[in-house]
Length: 150
Image (cartoon, rainbow, N blue to C red; front, side, top):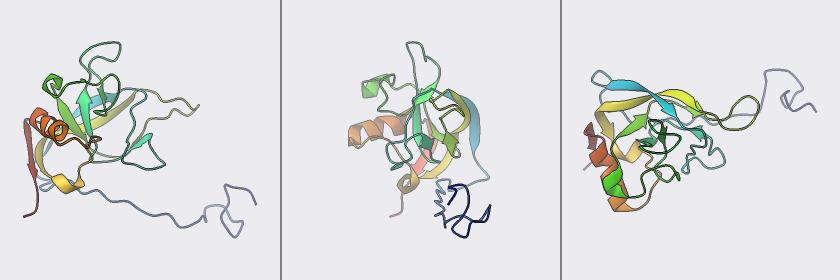
């Protein structure tokens, strides 16, 4: 069987796919986004088996020094600020982004980052498990109100 064809050998009819939904915005009428550049090699550690497909709700930090300065990456990337106090700006990825190029290796990608609005904490992916790191990421998103259900 040709892999591009489905189980019945017909083009376009493939195996069932699972749709993932990440509705992290609490108020879609009151949100501001900005254009960002995601640095090559940025991964989403919470997206199992699809690390180079970044999912909506992923928190990204701005790289301040080095060859990727001004671009955004996940908090655990080697180019990211190593200390919580050094995180200057963070945004939330607006939609899915595949960082792989058509020829294979990861490349810089343009995307939209949410920098203002109300969001649901349970739907965000911080890329970090340390509570102090998560707190620093939320503090770097100065105009984002991170809410949680009580």
